[in-house]
Image (cartoon, rainbow, N blue to C red; front, side, top):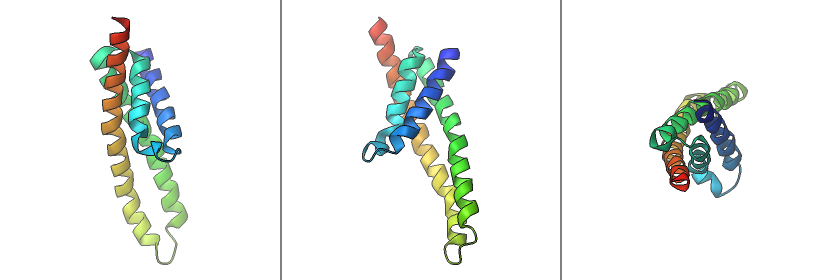
Length: 118
């Protein structure tokens, strides 16, 4: 379980870093999940666990950044109400994208690590 948690943390950090690189940001969760699953090295089940944990860990910074955005822009005259209403929806969409592609990448990474060993 220790390698699964550390793999998920590595995947989360890599995903956040990859989100800042243009063009790569569209596949950032996949690449982060690939690294997480490869490090966790638990076959299909280990990849699934590390991908799920990576998603859970990504929820925290996602909602923190969304909360900061809402706090800063909620009193803006025209955009305030729109930003407050749409930030939650945008955060959910980004987390769903991260979850789906991250779990797929994590499972593939774990299977690749298992194949390398076998």
